[in-house]
Length: 386
Image 1: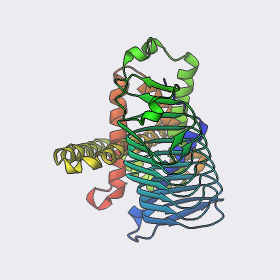
Image 2: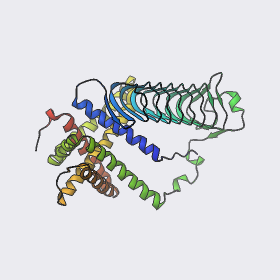
Image 3: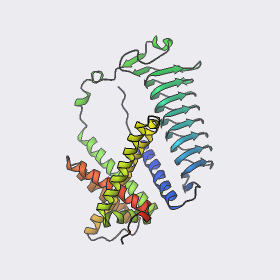
C-alpha cells in the first residue's frame, strides 16, 4: 500500500503555479501583445505567455505558465511549470514540478521530479525521487532515490537506486536499465504487468492487487479530529492567500470581478453555468470524436481550474460584502483585501461543511465566481453597472 502525503512544499508549489497562471492569464487578457509577461520578485521569476523561453541566469525558483514553456538557464531553486509542452534544459538546484501534455526534463535535477503529462521523458540524472503519471513515461537518466510511476508504459534506461513502484501495463528495461531497491507492482492479477524475467525472478518483487481485499479495513479508518480541523484551516488559508495575492497584484481587476458578482449575481451565475457547461460539454464532444480523446485530460484540468478560480473570486466577493454589512467600506489597501479574502474563505468553508446545503452553496459560489471572471475578461459582452 502506497501513501502519499502533501507537505508544505507541495502546497507552496501549487500556490506558485496557480499564481503564475492567474497573473499570466490576466496580463494576456489585458494586452494583445504575444510577448511573455514576466514578474520578477526577488530571485524568483513568474512568467506566462503563449511561448516562453526562460533564459535568465542567477535565478532561484521559476514559475512558468503557457502553451509551450522552455527553461534553458541553470537555476538554484525549483522549477514549477504548467504548459502543454514543457522542456527543462538547464540544471535545477532543487525540485521540478511540471504538468502538461508533453514534459521533458533534460537537465540534471538535484532534488525530486514530480510530473503529470501524457508523455514524460526524464533524460537527465535525478538525485532525489521521481513521481510521474502519464501514458508513456521514459526514465533515461539515473535516479538517486525511488521512482513511483503510474502509466500505461514505463521504460527504464538508467539505474533506479531506490525502490520502484509501478502501476500500468508494460514495464520495459533498456540495456543499462536497473532497479537496485524493491519493486512493487500494482496489478489486478499477478503477471498482468509485462516484466523482464530477470526482474520477475528476483525475490524482492511484490505484486499488489488493485482491489479492496488488498487493504482490509482501510475503508473503516477515519481521520482524527485534529487532522479534520487542520485540513479545514489549510483549505481556508489556501483560498484566502490566493485571493489576497490576486487582489494585491491586480486590485482593479479583482474589483471589477467582485462588482460584476455583487451588482448582478443572477447574471454572474448564468455566465458561470454556461462557461463551465461549455468546458465539460466540450470534453464530451472530444470523446465522441475519438481522436480528440487525447485532449480530454486537459479539458478536465481546465474545468477543475475554472471551478477553483471561481471559488477564489466568489469567496473574495463574499468577504467584501460581509464586511460591508459590518460597516466597512470597500478595500482600500492590501490589509483590507487580505481581511476580506480571509473572511470570505472562512465563511464559505463553514457553510460548505453543512451536509447537502453546503455542496449546493459551493456550486453556486464557484459558478458566480466564474461569471465574475467572464464579465472581467469580456467587458464588451456584458453590461457595466457602477
